[in-house]
Length: 535
Image 1 (spheres, rainbow, N blue to C red):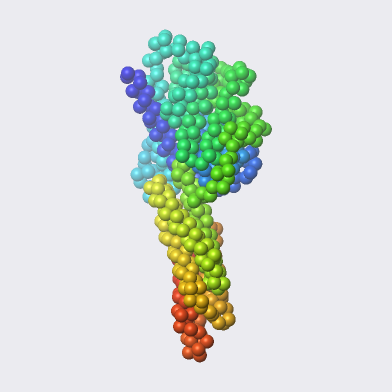
Image 2: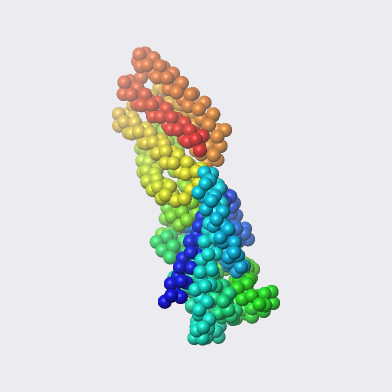
């Protein structure tokens, strides 16, 4: 019991240290991480590189594959891209095992000391992120030392050693054990840490460690499979693809490549079992990718064969395209995706504006109905984005990211108000259609002119937000002044037409309300520009 408690405590420290270090790395590399993922191409090889780099940064293949499931579910990553990233994630996760296989425990107190000093006495967020990395490093190796000390007494139990050797003789049992351990603790890195702790005490030979290692790789698929529950069928395919890849790799290594790997790692480190296991883990995952990479498209086809695309699925339209709670595990990427979703919401609001104006100028009930549908979509997107932003705001963010989240709350509301004004214009269209109102050619020219300026301003504000280009803000302010000037001018010319009997009272009321709504659209565009400037 004492051994189990000590081992559990060491495992807890190991996991906490790994998560703390990963959190610090994510914050430090947040923008870079976002750019890496955004530069994904359709090539599988590029996906492998990206998957390796991202997983090495966030220190968890489970988190990386869950992120991939989220991307696929959000519709921003195809299965062809996903298979490459999943392959790369398997390589990237070996970094942790390599790290803990070196005897770096002596550095843990130094890392903890420097880390706590930096964290307590620095006010700079970037320095605090570095402090988190150091603290995580120190806690991780302290946990590793705890696990080594915990398993040391097991050397006296011949039954335990015999059980581990039995796994080497009966590989299926070893694979099942590795699968169960990783599936329960949800971290292949932690289960590898336990294997290395046992090896460092001379308790487990390489022959017994290899099947458990293979089982670890299959067990890490449990996290992505769980995360795909309730997600789209495409997200489920990504999770099954991950499982298929690891299962095929395990079969290949058991039947063909297991002995060559064992010989290679023994030759490299003949007297260091911990390094042998770490090198076997790395070699297994790299060779697995190299062997299966040419067959990546066939793995995708196989998964599509066992889970084909349904007719309902092909016709389904997601309310949000870029948001997925799985991506919240990497806040910097989640924030980038939120901006994309806000831009998408802005495009819907712009469509509402276009159809509302068409409904008024051409007296089209069809355009009125289109506007109402766009407005309903924008309202739905507003609720979902605000809910997502609220969850994002509770995550660890750096000062710049937190400020951007706060400003996005306001931006989302400004875009929704633009859609409201589009709906107001469509209501004016209903009045014009019901009363069969007419407008003079000059009035229509003025309506189109101020609409063109207001819509142009809204589109520029969205582009300014998307590209985070503060140079566009001056253009937004300039157009806002032009719209304000046109509103005043057209109110004056309208009064002249009214006095000269060229316009009816009812048409005049609709005309004036239109001017007001379009001027407000330009105001909200200005607000969006202000939010970008404040970021």
